[in-house]
Image 1 (tube, helix red, strand yellow):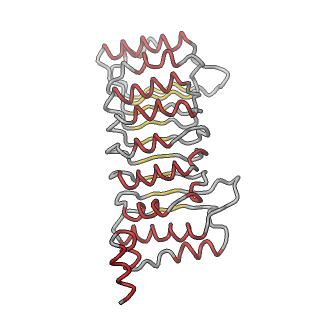
Image 2: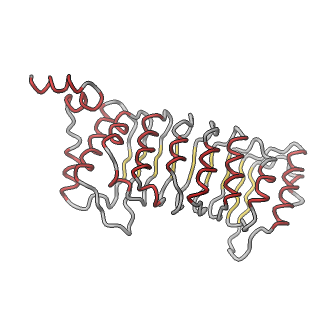
Image 3: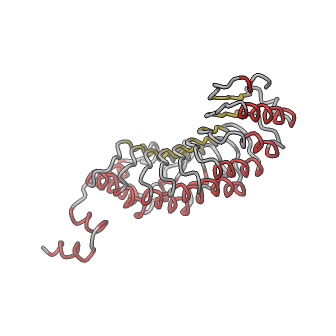
Length: 295
């Protein structure tokens, strides 16, 4: 730790532990806090900070003192740590206070249902955030997080892979609103969930008119039997076709293990046969659409 304050040009600091038997104790965090503080006083500006598998049970008490000395931090990576409520509070506070954060990785951090709000509150003010990774958090309630991200003007990459609670109707609604509101989202990773089975027409309508989404992954988990209704398969096909018709950017769609029979695939492909009537019904005037059928 003593050498950190002397490295004035240091931009990336990674503290990784490949032996799960050992973790940072209280003294480790105190020494790190002092080292980062002196580093900042000496004119250093760290841009990337990664903690991997080093958090202890009481790390939350010492995490914020470390982070508060990094006002220009751009990338925070907490992958493979078990985050407590205090840890999440510290991260949420930093997201609110520091305006340069572009990337946040909270993959496999065991974020509990009660901790999600702390992260979501911080995201409301993280206006420079571009990338957020939340994969492999089985207990994460992503609804409020997704909703708040819809108002992040630069968010372009959201990873919710293997987030089991992302299967709820509330999560589908939050993602639908994200697609409708966001003007920057490029990549949406929802693989390892059964969210495809819960999709609604509203989601597919929003998919059709979104201008920025390029990459959408909704692979079914290997441990589940596909349960995608043929009606939803057709709506997804229509959403993709509408996206192309309206000059959207969607170029990649993955739905592995979602369509287990010829019937599902046939319904999906049938959805691509969108007409002027379909377009008017989805994005125009239903009355005009009905008049079109009389002609």
